Amino acid sequence: MSTPDIQPDNKEWDGLVKRYGNRAVTIAIFDAVLNTIQETLAAMNERNKARNAPLDALEAHVTKLHALESAGGDLAQRVQALEQKGYRGVWSPLQRYEVGAFVTDFGSLWHANLASQGIRPGTNSATWTLSVKRGKADAR
Picture 1 (cartoon, rainbow, N blue to C red):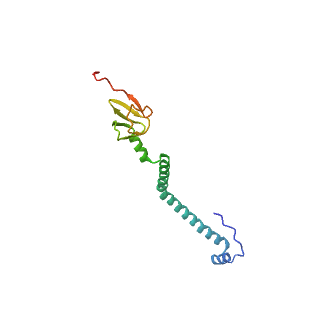
Picture 2 (spheres, one colour):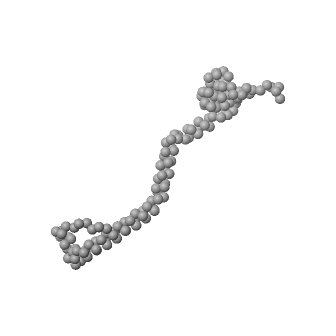
Picture 3 (cartoon, rainbow, N blue to C red):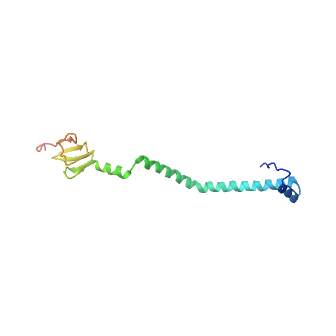
């Protein structure tokens, strides 16, 4: 470590030089003290890095989680929407059907093109599309 230039008219410096005998000895003592402080700080920094490593990893995971949450929107609403799709059983005028739902009515399978309630499949082609027509009664 290089010793900073010290002004010869500094009273504190002059007092230290008198205390330790001469300028060279005083500089050597200060160099040793400064090196010890620098080594101690470097060691503390390394210990802190090791201590902080799990926290840094956790912070990275939290950042990813926040990104996923903001990109995914409200997950509960998305799951509920998915659950509304698929086969919903026999059509009922009391049941609300979301887009993508399938129902059976009079033996045929129908797909919901629009969200609806009380609109019977086959009565409105914009709302329902026939997916599978019922078979003949004597086809067995």
